[in-house]
Length: 236
Ligand SMILES: [Zn+2]
Image 1 (cartoon, rainbow, N blue to C red):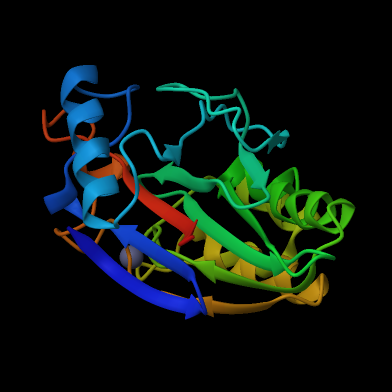
Image 2 (spheres, helix red, strand yellow):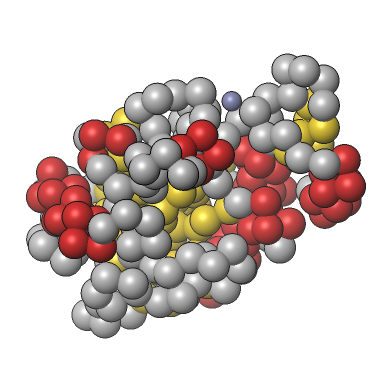
């Protein structure tokens, strides 16, 4: 169920799910099944039922602040990043880059965040905006975990599109194994984290190449489409 799961700091856990956790998004497949899979994931992480805040992702760069005790069931806020003072958060992907972050607030309590960084999110700098929102909460000692996504060898794009994204984030310019233009989204995210002074761990797996992960580019139209989640939570 969990592709990667670590206690990253005392009382703080990070997880990335795999296909065995099932589809976790309402945007593909059966909403009832996604809801059941979410409850199963929460249980496996020791979280209460409805303890994980998801969001409705739209390939934008809005950062939603999740206030304690203001949980929004099912679809959550319309945003591509969230920041909380301890509420467990989830980001959904199938080739885009899932980023989870943790910092320490002025009172020592955790400041948690997630971000959904696809092509549009890297170009519109959703990850730097998320870090700014964490700073606004007084967060220090911020670290990030970058989860599985499509890799730079697999994400072929037209040359004009590559140029457009690379103009904003030069680290994304890459080539496929066939030598055609591609985008390396995790490289772009890691570069943005580095520029913001945030240390990052990269869980380096390619969603398109790994059958144990969901890939939109591989699975679309196959009837087996789904979304994996990147999760960050604080155990109280
Ligand atoms: Zn790949």
